[in-house]
Length: 252
Image (cartoon, rainbow, N blue to C red; front, side):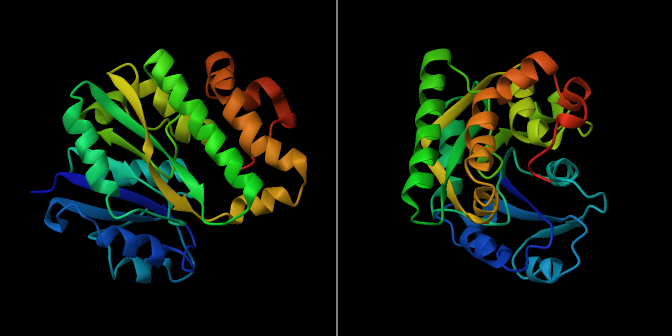
């Protein structure tokens, strides 16, 4: 019987997806109780071929976009608990087991957030990453909920996710993937945070932003982390309608 589903969206990830899937098939949680679902999001490389070597299901989602791919994977998931990560991440051996125990211990919890460490030794980038973990942890301790469910490391009760309607496919992907879904899930129960539940992820996107200097890093770490919730609260899920052509989704 499948208890847990793991959903990984992938677009042209032939260089890193095998590392991700190898970490998922070697888990302390019994293999017969979880399934691995890869959603191939219109890749043109060997992503699909590699995914089929390890995944239980490889789904096709021809509509390009992270939210489309995430939603497709959640719809076909059979587990009572659905975990998600990214194709450029890889997970500790107890990643599934720790998430499962969190949900078993707290019946009122409908979603669980974790965090991610750079697969890199850059001191400043790792310091910023740990600072965001600290802020999320104290937000949870003070308010009882968190306002962001990280894309590379979060989990959901499947029945509560289905009740919520899932990801808003019309939302700006920057907001809809991590912040808007946290607000939606909070209507059905506790959105918790485990500071000791995490993954490693590739620094490639961070370094691509670093090329644009402090402005790029500030956009990634401070503007998004600090003002993302404000965007969603005030401007809802369509910031472009408010900011006009000045708004740019840095994840494109």
